[in-house]
Length: 200
Image 1 (spheres, helix red, strand yellow):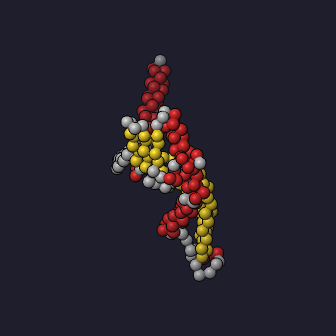
Image 2: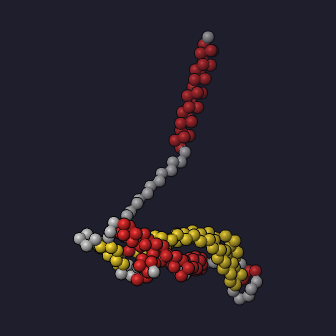
Image 3: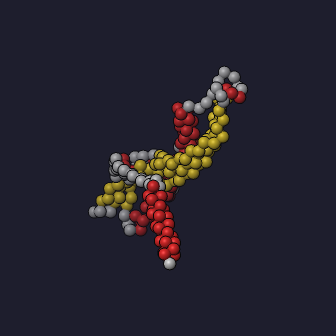
């Protein structure tokens, strides 16, 4: 009888030691804590109109060598760029006035279409560096700038800026139609965007 009691007690003690050991192991495991500080540096009221969205995919390749064009002295890199460009108008320098007594809306447009925002993602791949010629952080930054400049210059060509102007004309023409419907008058001070030109 005593032997059975001793066996039972031994089993209970083994269970307790195992349970306590498991808790101790879990407590010894590393704990990760994350902390973030969000600081709002500036807030500004703006009035921007976006009327054209462009998406570009570009493969930019840079090659160079020092002394001689041979393996250990050569280096090359390929950068893949995906960009989303928004074109439109910054209306902060333009004005819109409403004369309710005369039923006239005055719009002063002082801006040409421009890039409102650009979001670019760059990925490096196929980086080849020679033993005596490797890319420095400054060179990588310069390559990034070159790739970005190519896309910005393309977005600023007349092909796309002209499309933004056309979209603006369509917007003004639609606004003119609404004004005609309610027997109001719309006056736009920029002839290039005057909907009257579209009616000729």
